[in-house]
Image (tube, rainbow, N blue to C red; front, side):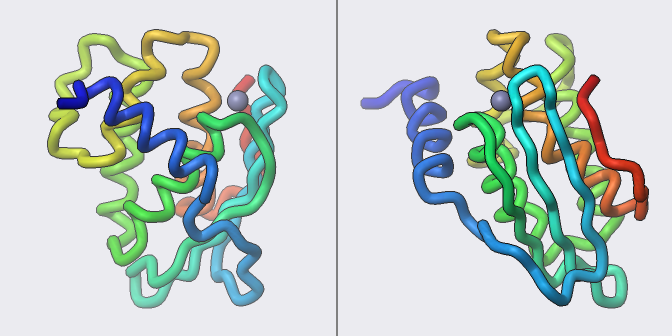
Amino acid sequence: MMDLNDLYREVIVDHNRSPRNFRRMEDATRSADGHNPLCGDKLTLYLKVNDGVIDDVSFEGSGCAISVASASLLTESVKGKTVPEAERLFATMHALLTRDDATVDVAALGKLGALSGVREFPARVKCASLCWHTLDAALHRQSEPVRTE
Ligand code: ZN
C-alpha cells in the first residue's frame, strides 16, 4: 500500500516528466505570463474561452519540477470549466497552498491535492502557486506580467 505522500510524489514526478498540454496556442483568446524570480520559474498560460467556457488551455515555459507539475495539473483541471468555476478553483488552490488552516477538502481535489505537500516547504509555495496566479491574470485579462514578488 502506498501512503498518500507517496501517491502525491508520484503525481508530481509524472506531471513534471510528461507535462500535459505543454504547447504554444496560436489561437488563444487570452494569455498571461508568470515569473517567479525566487526560483527562476517562467511560464505563459494560454486560454481559449468560448461563451464563458474554457474550451482549451495550454502552457509553455521552463522551471522547477513543482512549477511545471502544478501548471500541468492546472491545465488538466480547468479544461471544460466555466470562467467562474475556474476562478473558484483558483481561490481554493490559493487557500490550499498558502493557509495551514484552510478548510479545503483535499481529497475532493483529486490529483490537485498532490500540491498540498508544498506547504511543508515554504520556499516552494511560490513555485506551485505561480501558474494559478497567472491563470487568474489571464481570466481577468491583466496585461501586466505576474510576478510572485
Ligand atoms: Zn520553482
